[in-house]
Image (cartoon, rainbow, N blue to C red; front, side):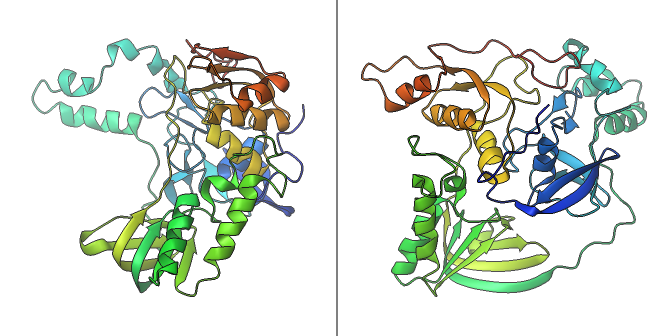
Length: 384
């Protein structure tokens, strides 16, 4: 069976000359420098990452942007770490969370069959009599539904702290954030640009706006736009950038704590611009939470940024032209795309992307939807 890792030029954020070894659930894996826990596991064909909070359903990659609970894992000293955000390091020990037995064969998965008898907050209605009995049941339910385990001997990190004052704080380093920062800097404002990713560019790093061009080519439209914007950003002395940084809140008088690694920046800004981007709306159908079902942006991130094939076969479900671009990128990455399901009616005037998708041998079904996804035999991955 071929490995999911794609050859160059795929994998903009990984260093193929540096191999990193880590463990997940007691098994040793290897990844590349720049991989996150989730992408390194995906490169090893390990798509099952965790179990859901209540019914212990299998969970896999969804957004690959640190915006969902599917990738929560246990580190030695940290519960509920985001596997799609934490970079792998040599010797890193990672455990899955919220299962009984093994991750693949979770005994508590039987709770899914009991779902009709376990409505929301059922325990508050069924276990409060006789008086005082809830205190006994509470321990059981908290342990059964809990996620990570806290290391009671953990010594908290000491964060370096510094202050930053600026005229304008821009949160988000995608195309909108870069453009806003440039505009403000040109007007003479003191600008601080913060982005949570390791590199600026946002969707320009992975999306393919120009479907006629190979998305991985250095001269693609998105690549050129990103390079041009970043080049302009670097020209301004009054524009500071912080990458790999998270804004932890927004308080009175535009006081915003920004965490970058083990450094806390206490930022006070006159004005704040939020350019945090957006995520697709998940399609609702039966079993839409199975591992192997992910956002198109997650699939494109896997391909472009980490050089990992999202799967060997697939179907794209969409309601916009972004799905067409994703289908073309998947096909170029060697994924056998069986078809594209478009909720919309076929446009009367046609569209260039329709012709390109059909030319790639991908059938399009307009005004169609998805009823359900079929699970694999072990119930841990989508099969159809």
